[in-house]
Amino acid sequence: MTHAERCAEIVKLRFMLGVKLAAFNQFVAERLGLSVTDMECLEVAYFDEVQPVTPGRLSKLMGLSPGSITTSLKNLEKAGLIAREPDPTDGRRILLRFIPGSRATVNACFEAVNRSLAEFDDTLGSEELESVKNYLSAMLRIIDKHMADSTNRLA
Image 1 (cartoon, rainbow, N blue to C red):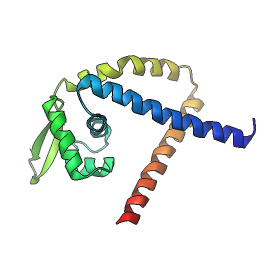
Image 2: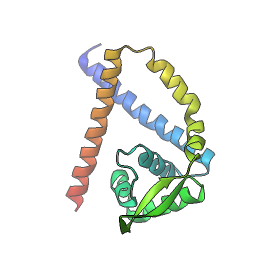
Image 3: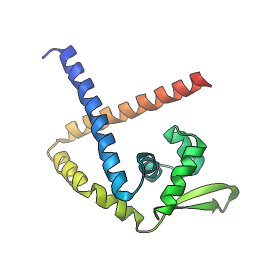
Image 4: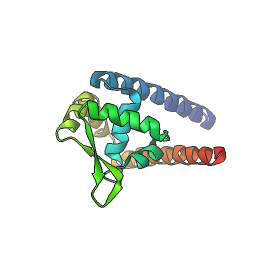
C-alpha cells in the first residue's frame, strides 16, 4: 500500500469514527432522556481541566451560543445531573456542580464500551499507546485551532 493509499484510509477511518461516535452519543443521550447537545455539554464540563466550569467557559469550549448552553444546562438540571450555583467569590458568575452520584448514572451507559476499549488498550504496547495519544491529541488541537480561526474570521 502506498503512502497516499494509507492516508486515504486514515481519512476514511476518521470520518467513520466521527459518524459512529455521533451515533453512539445519540444512543446514550436517548437512554438518559437528553439531547446530544445536552450530553456533549455534560461530558465537556466533566472532562474540562478547569473545575468547576462556568456556563461562559462551556459556551466557548462547545462553540455554542450562551442561549444554547442555557437550554442544555436547564435540561441537565431537570435530569438531576448538575446544579448551577452562584460563585462564592463573584456573585455575577455561575458555577456548574455535578450532583453526587449522577456521574455513576452516566458512566453506566458507557461501561460496556469503555470496558471493551480498555481491553483493547491493554493489547497495545507503550509505544503504540503513546502514538495513539499523540495522534488523538494532535487531532483535537487541529480541530480547536480551525474552529478558533473560523470564529475569528466571522467576527
